[in-house]
Length: 122
Image (cartoon, rainbow, N blue to C red; front, side, top):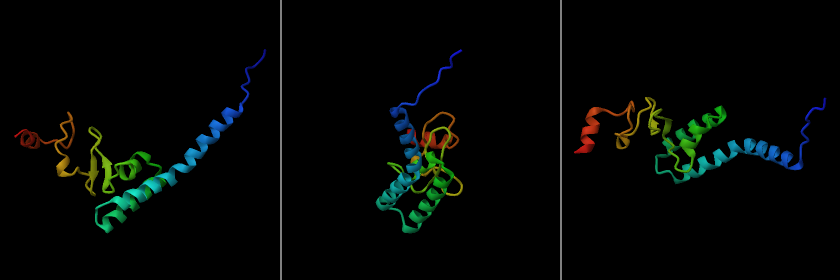
């Protein structure tokens, strides 16, 4: 019986190498985005440094979703998490959304409160 042996073409080798390079470059690109986000930030310098330290820890953990949330295109250096239902940024040690983001009006969001919903409608 003949076995199907796949011969690796030069294109396959290049695709594999590109994939490896992208994986190796990801932390460096994240740091670059963080620096640009920090440079544009209007937060206090102490808060910016805290945000950068937090993001650096997330890069080491390879938590790319949170790294993108903190330092991505519309990065929020104060973000420390995201709501599991509506994806709004959670800030502070107690992981709560900022007041101006509420109510999000997403069904079953744990941060929506009945009094907030009626206040927005007025």
